[in-house]
Image 1 (tube, helix red, strand yellow):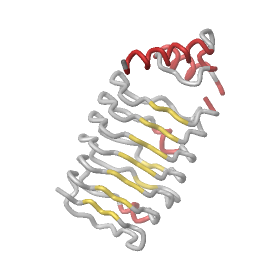
Image 2 (spheres, helix red, strand yellow):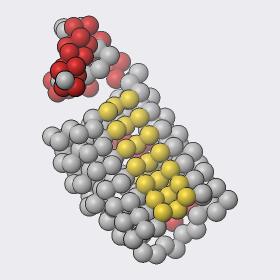
Image 3 (cartoon, rainbow, N blue to C red):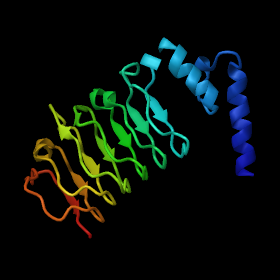
Image 4 (cartoon, rainbow, N blue to C red):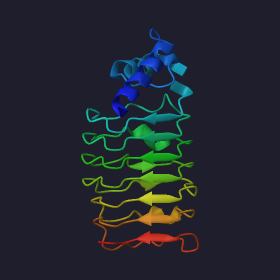
Length: 192
């Protein structure tokens, strides 16, 4: 029954503007998403991209055309292996969810996500390095590195002065040379 309701909802939304996908409130069809991302210059108003469970997604597009993006959800995109370097410059991004991206081996070398509050890299089992933090990322409250292959944290994590929760459980980290701002960190998960 759930699948039937979901299909009915998709059809209702598609009827809103069958000829122009950029006017739809939600996009499901691959060809509609590609059309909107390539042809529509209003993608500047785009605030949320939710591509969770997109098994065919191998690499992300250039994010320079969506400077107002606030949430990027790529959860369980199990074939995703490449993130475009422009991701590191999304100044308004609040949530970055890469949970379960098992083929992801690297992120942009440097990130400057000044509005980011939640950064989820849980179960990115091939990810070995965390990007250098450039600029002010004091808004970051939660960082999930559980289940990653990250062995060492960059010294720049010391700049994460707003960090309240850090999850390192099941990660490859065994020791670190950086210090965390102890006055804000409330939850530290270290289960090995």
